[in-house]
Length: 159
Length: 105
Image 1 (cartoon, chains in turn green, yellow):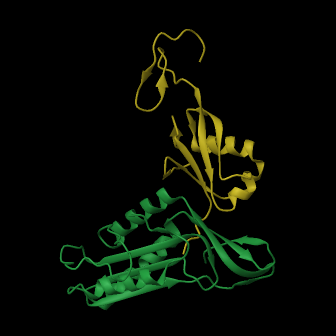
Image 2 (cartoon, rainbow over the protein chains, first blue to last red; image 1 turned 180 degrees about the vertical axis):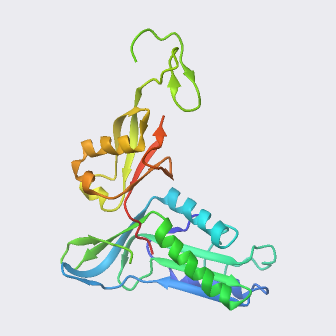
Image 3 (cartoon, chains in turn green, brown; image 1 turned 120 degrees about the vertical axis):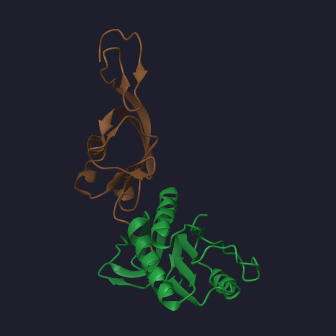
């Protein structure tokens, strides 16, 4: 399962994940992270959007590797519309993990990244969501070209 | 190199001639550039004639010869989707990816 979607993350994907986890009677906590393109002010201009690219095969392999390390399995769940659901979730591995990263141009205010984790208890939900986020930023070959209102650009650097 | 070659053996790493010496051979190799390196090289990917076997460090040197601007850049090299150490010897490469610092999220 690739984490990549063309364009930004659709809020319907987030709604789907929440709904899907609501239906899982083993889950006691959900933690969601939705990244958003910020209108950073650089001396060269203000960011209007970010154009994301990736080495997709390597990035998906990196996600699989860090999920095994952090979560204990590498199953990234599918996300469709909010009405699509699997019903019986008892066979799905816990913790449950949803990750999507957008590719292509994503304007200010839109979301390039979405992570949802469903766990039995809250501490684990907070911790896993944060660890997945940091691993994604440091281990997956993804690049962002910040487009500026001056019509120039600047390559995104993770802090 | 040189002399008649009666047979070539393959030891799982280098190709060897009848004297057990590594054979040098070249392949047109797919090189991919990511992030800011696409601007420095002017391309997302290209095919370059690379002579094998060589180390990852030597491969980097070959890329810098093609694109001198790469010499000042910090990036890692992945061969067939696996990041390799500088001193790793390569006997073949299907795809070389030049990866500067990641910036997802």
